[in-house]
Length: 300
Image (cartoon, rainbow, N blue to C red; front, side):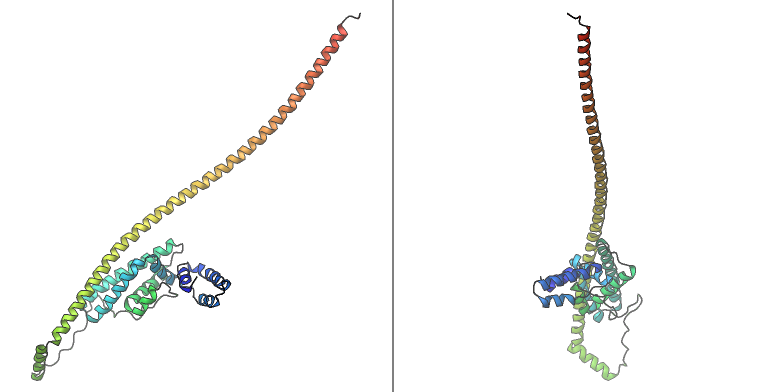
């Protein structure tokens, strides 16, 4: 047993199971003579409901982690380089992704036996926004050991549907400025910078498109798995009810069998008593008949 294994176990558990299991693992470590491990386990904090749901997403859907992290990298680069139209498109993809993953986290929590509230789901969404915006938050979330939801306060700059980056203020074109501009074009650094920006834009678009495709694939798989889990749960409930019904029928049959056996034993005892009475009556009748015959016989 080591701290990594125990932490992975604890942060998968429902929050109400955390404290008791942590105490059990601390006791095991002390019994094994590892007081340092016991102390480290004791420092692990119980997660909030929304943090637990975010951890579930990491542990139960690991395929969602890497695409989200890559999209975050692409978005952070895009917010430094892209134009307003592209930013709005990436922001739309960001909203779709966050909504889908927060919904999936809610489904995983419900399947684990502890549905989350709407307020907790909003906290999951804020955590995912922070993951996309902040590389430190992304690393913390990807560990699967959140204790509380992450704040999205350091997210991307707000970009409304009609917003676009403010264009630079035009400078007065003097003769000297014109000469400087011509010289800059001749040397070519502006063209090189524009070419590099286009390359970064192309990479960011490819990453965003690939992440969106992976998201759609994962959503379909999650929806299918959720339907299958619901159907399996329904079948299990029906089978469990059938077992309960058959168990009750078997109990009634056993009680009826016991009653029948008791009645049979009583009837057998009565039959034996009656047989004894018949035999005794037959012996008495035979004796009486012999006595009558003897008395009827003439004396010699």
